[in-house]
Image (cartoon, rainbow, N blue to C red; front, side, top):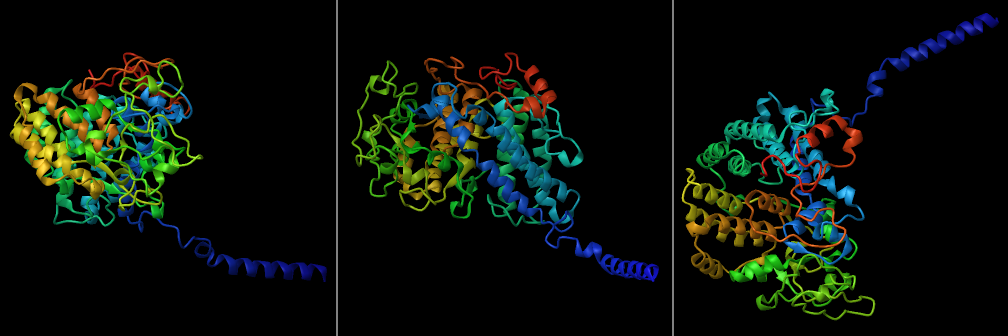
Length: 538
């Protein structure tokens, strides 16, 4: 009897098991799980664009200060303003690297999913353009970095080799040439495109403008290649107006905020950043009407005062004053109160909103840079991240023409750039609209002069990228062109006495990719230092 019961139990169990396993795979498969076969790769484009545009913290802390677009007396920004080390320094030196490869991963996966698929022909090529856009910033910042093996962890490459920067530039130009020439407006239109809404004609002009930017980076080390691709870009058709400006609008209400705004919202940062004396003095020397569009004197000091919508700053042209770099609030010889022409402080809004002795220096206008809604208060608002502009492109064409390359008339390109750069600020916020008559008058009275053409072109490039908060490109073109001629800050406990020419490699690479790191450092004649120069910066 006992044996019969056991046998019956086994039969019942076997029957139940058979019943359970009949739909085992179906039952145990997540119906919400995606796969390469069903996933829409268009979604990756928007993510790559947004992630690339969000390089706010590091460029605000370092590059904006190094090129003397901005200045600060506060310890947090002292890392950039005075070439010192404190706080989250090691984190910030790795931001361009980590954020860059984070964005590149989306572009590379988009390429993987669309390779050989006719329905995604344009999207695949835009993936290549995005990869070049993203990784040019990374290699310009550090030097040798992964390119040929970047984003290939799914293929089993977990320790990508560091390509020589010269090889990276060769590859980027070839990749752009193939991708841009292959774009076809009669084919697929990307459906998740934050920059151009899937407009292939604009992507083509953007691609050739990016080719021009990549090519012009080589003017010091390979003028022949620079000329070849600058002329190819011009012949292909670069950006035609400010309507072609490449920009990403952030959406803070849905969690896609602007990194620069976030940086400035942290720890009273509104009262910590000011336009530099170097920039404002230069703009005023040319009576640049953008001064009133970008700068204001705070009504009072402190975060509460700056965020109060009833306390808009004063943007009167004559009152704007840039802050000299290299000063602090420590009470000694480098205290800001000791600076020549120190303007004094403005009163506090309340007893709890204590004043800081820098209120009468010009800050970036809150209404312009920290919101696109027209409100002074930047909290929960969105703004614009500029990536590459028509004005920038026209300046590069003007320089190429000045070098006697076949890229059109230098004076015409320069005039186009001046007008475009003044108009482009209004794309960030209409509050920064420069009067059309003032633009026309400025362009007419500031023609390109052949004897000083390179200086004029690159000084305007510096002003444009400063006023549009494009500080990575601002600092990089300063290294390439030598303009403006800057005087390094002198301060105690500096990690270098010269303005940094690169960023040291992220500290975590010593454990995550030691072989690649060693290869990259070996290419630097001065070692892994801020004063060392990348390949094209000779």
